[in-house]
Length: 408
Image (cartoon, rainbow, N blue to C red; front, top):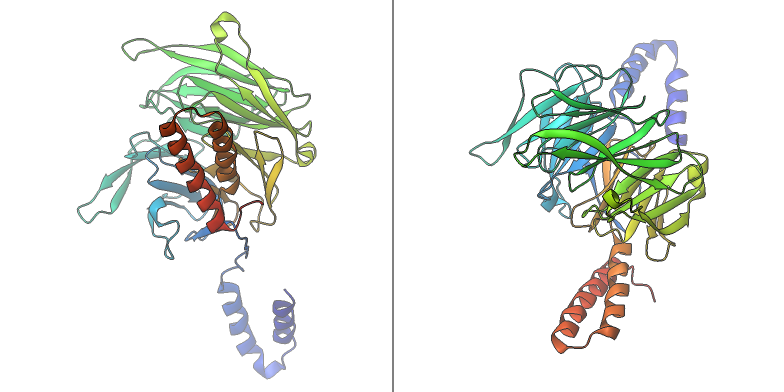
C-alpha cells in the first residue's frame, strides 16, 4: 500500500506545466485493475482467475467435470475440473444480458444451468450445446421464470432427479417449481426469516434454517408416474440454542451438519425412519466461537468426514470424527467469503469471495482415510480384505506425503 500512496502524492504535487501529463497519468492509474489479493499456503492447489468482478456463487456439476462460477461482471464461467492442477485454467464464458447472476446451479444432465438474476429478481435458464470443436454455446431460454418472491433470494437448487427446482427468499418463503416455471408448492418455513435453504442430494428433501434454533426438513413427494403430489414435514434438527446460520448434507443425504449463533457446529445422523417418528441422532458437537458474532457458511465433504467453516475471510477445517480443528486458512480472499464447496470427489475444497476461486487440497480428508483404514486393518480377518485396506491406507499416506501434510 505504501508504494501506491507515495505515487499519488507525487502525481498531485507536480508543477503546473506538467499538470496535463499528470491528468493522463491519473486516468491511466484509474484504468488499471484493482490489486489482486495475494494468498499462499502449502495446501493451496490452484487459484482460478478470469472474472473481472467479485464471484458470488459456484457449483460443481454432478458428473464432476465442471465448475460454474458467476460474478458481478455479467458473466458465468464454466471451468474444467481436469485442469485444476495444470498451470493454465481454461474457462468458457456465458454472458448475462443487461443483468448479472448472483446464484448458479447446473442441471443434473449438465446440459443446462440456472441462474438468479440480480436486477431481474428471477430465474433464467441457459442451455449448453456442444459444438463440433468441443466447445459449448450457451443460449438463454426466451422467457425467464415469472417473478414470485417478495424478498431477496437466499438460494436456488435443482433436484438431482430433475423433477423440481427450489427457490428460497429471506422472508419465510420457499417455492417448489416444475422445470417449465410453474409453482408446484409454496412452503412457509415459520422461521421468522430464512438464512439458507437447500435440496438434499437424494432429491427427497428440502431443508431450511433461519432465526429459530432448528433446521426444518420437508419431503417433496411425487407419484409413481413422476407427477408431483405434495410437500410434507419430515423431521427437524433440534439441539442448537440460537439461530442457525447454515447447514449442509453429505453426498448420500444420510448425514447433515449445521452451524449456529450459539458458537457450535453439529453433525447429525439423518438416516432415520421419520414416518415412524424417529428423530435424527446428534453424532458430534464442536466449538466454533466465531459463529456467535458473525454469519458463517459451512461445507461438508461428500463422505462427511471433514467439515469446512468460513467466517469473514477465514476457513477452518474440522475432523467430524474427533471434532478437532485440523487446518486454518486466514485472509484467503480480499473480500468476505461468499461460497464454499467440496468437489464431488472430496479431493478439493473451493472458496470464492473476490475475483478468484481458491482450491485447497483436502488434507484432513486423507487423514480421515488413514485413521479409518488403520482401525479396519486391526479388525480385518481375511487376507484379501487386508490387502485392499492396506492399498487405500498407502494411497492416503502417499497423498499426505506429497502435500507435506503427513502428521507424525
